[in-house]
Length: 514
Image 1 (cartoon, one colour):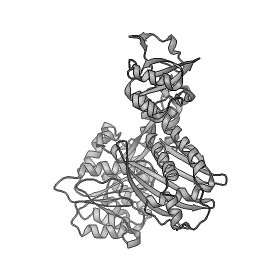
Image 2: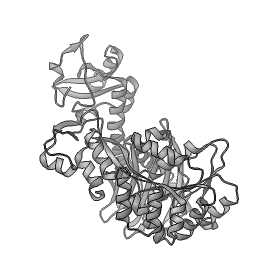
Image 3: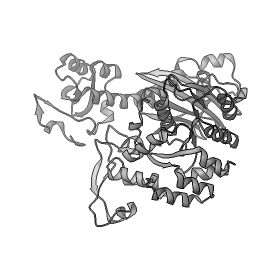
């Protein structure tokens, strides 16, 4: 059923119309006519109305008790139609999470006495642990989980407090709160994260583990003092979603074969690179999970430990006690390790120890912030590592980006134009089909989820010689491409040609990578 289709004109199936809720244009004002307890009890949703007739999507349209309860509550006639259980549950979660949050916000503004002072006393701590603020924060977090948000931004400004969710890589404003309630909200977050509630002048980090509707969520907290108050970011790590194997990461068959060959090396350094939020940790943990065998001693040093892996000895960096990446790595080397994972190489000292560990019989995994695989070599040399050590230690470099995936239920097909084919580097005379974002109830403006694109560069004999000669990044890149390396730009364009993402998204991610 397409957007705007009139159910009254829809062909009936055993007396009832079948409606596709993912594509149906649902009226938000109609949805909210029914309370959440009623729609969840009977698994139904109000999707439209005509005059005094309410259109109900139901998994069981013969549930006359449910229909009678809806009639009694709304004082309207009811016309049921059929939808799947999963579709109805999805729509309930989508619409009612936002309406509940708004309701909680209204209650909060009515009932809660704002804290204006900078000094937090015991009675005020008790106040921010009371029902209104707890309900407000819980509703924000629940809505974030239901909308698959990766981060929650709580940003004070001159006019109020802006709450934004990062969904599929994009920030979306969810609500605005009165600025006078900032202290209460931040204090509540700090209490949950076991942070210093009295300290407002420096940034702080905290952590919360929580469970919600079969989602085990690890929430990392970061506060930052600004001119309008403390800005807070909550990063949500859904542990229930982490069950990856290498084959699910998005590597092509060719690159997967190369990766398997790299992972079979008994020692050396494997680096996963890319900007912040590009999925490096997921790739690293997946590889680590693959290498975690009974006969291997696997030790990690991380900041923070994002996912706990059974059988792996994971060390949490603690700067207050003097446990840094460098000092932790030194200690690890005295623990007879076979495989070492370093969360991130941030400084020259860590880089030097990691490289020396790699050339002395250990397999070392780590991440680095670089634009692509060839530039990683230059970055290590820039950190003070001698070229001959880099060429001896590094066995493979994976560079990656995250790309938004088109919603399979609503994406629209069209023929690529001359200019689009030219941008992609494809013969302009070829007929090429592309897909674009449309938007429906099942997605976020035409996209649902993200996937990774990769650039995998094994460090072979030719690359080693170039590193030893201090060759430029461009020379190394050219040689790697001649050896068969698929670049990030080629990977993201391939994704667009396969219909998994739009050309617009592919160019956004890959334009600077040509």
